[in-house]
Image 1 (cartoon, rainbow, N blue to C red):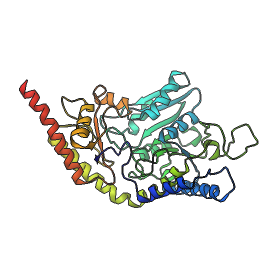
Image 2: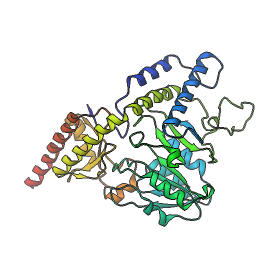
Image 3: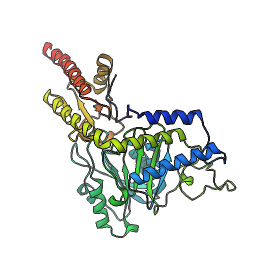
Length: 388
């Protein structure tokens, strides 16, 4: 199969990821729960991964990293863990439901006040979109590093810079939460340099790990409340949740095989990102141009991260995606991509859109096959319209 659904999960996995995950499954132990050699080795490998990610994302000093089961849980921890009654939050139409649903739930229950920034069509949010919404009680601002629908890349560094300028007192400054699901590591992130407060990332997308692991990096100065309470392997004499990170936020058994795989996938990704990101951008630029040339409605203008969304006139997106899979052996994704507000803005809330997302192993042959398939699908519709 030609796999063009990398925005959902990366198809390519480095050999070291598979080898490491299998090795842990064959020699399982519970990190942080026992004093025997296997358990200690397991825990040390988890900490090596934690340190590596903090270093690579510019967060080795003044930040904590919490392992979660996915990026959704990381975002939920950031949101539910930092907000209190009476807080005001600014989200955007580009945000994923992993952000929108927790926020709208808090709004519905009367805990927070919520404002939604509306960027220009097919673009990422800018500082100018946020400023009119700022209030004295604004506690949190959420940003999607890369839209999983349009591929628009947000200049989080510029927005953070403006926040620091307008709120020189850190205690009065809104927390900046970045959803890095689609952008890390293709879009460079240095949290300390960029003065970012919180960053959520999954293992199974751009970092080429496996499903079941994610992480949240946050500033030490943020008083984060745990999302889950339970066994931590520390302070077991107490019936109350410990306060010290990371254990306070990592209750229960960690998915060590996934964390070890994340380490190997992240190592490979950061070492090779310059090479494969160049290829993704070149292939995506060419694909967008060809789709436009054959009369397909394309919603993507930024080719950097390989997220390309489009529609064929006369077809529901689910039909196109099914035809691509059934008749042409091409994997894509249709629908609303868990991001309803951006689809409302695009006018695709009813039919959705087809998303083809390129990855580290995508080739010119893959994109050529997609164009051939789209032409054939489009020709069927053009013929039907002519017969009418």
